[in-house]
Image 1 (cartoon, rainbow, N blue to C red):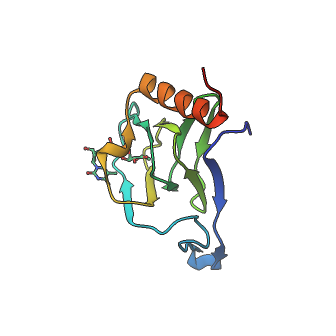
Image 2 (cartoon, rainbow, N blue to C red; image 1 turned 90 degrees about the vertical axis):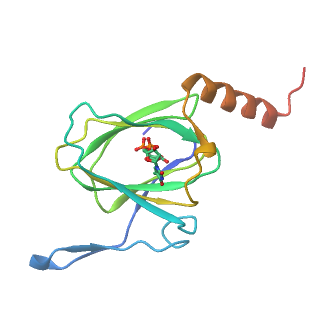
Length: 148
Ligand code: T46
């Protein structure tokens, strides 16, 4: 998979209980790299043309699980992009800062579930793509130590 900043896959410990189903376990700071302050989940994604995301976060870290069905996730760190199908309930997608993410192609039974490192703050969102590119370009330039 292409190298994308602020992104990784997290496989949860999973116990197969035979005919009684499967349990996947997630513990803060053990399986995910932050304390969970907020949980939200999205469902009723019956509309095949639904598009969610289309933003990046300045400070928020999240781990996203598709606990039913599937969807396509597009990630863009300002330099590289990838697209892949999210469908394993026991594999979380870590979404760190400065990562443009878009979710599409939801299956009719899709439910996604998100663990977040902070409460909801609209001010943490960058919802305009050009603004996102300017923001990450400026940050990368500053961290390179180069000056005019
Ligand atoms: C993200 C992706 C994966 C709240 O009031 N509180 C909340 O905690 C959330 C998550 C949303 N909202 C409100 C804000 C909007 O008025 O719910 C509405 C829909 O939110 P949004 O358009 O941001 O939904 P998504 O699915 O595009 O994005 C969500 C998260 O907001 C976002 O942080 O990374 O899921």
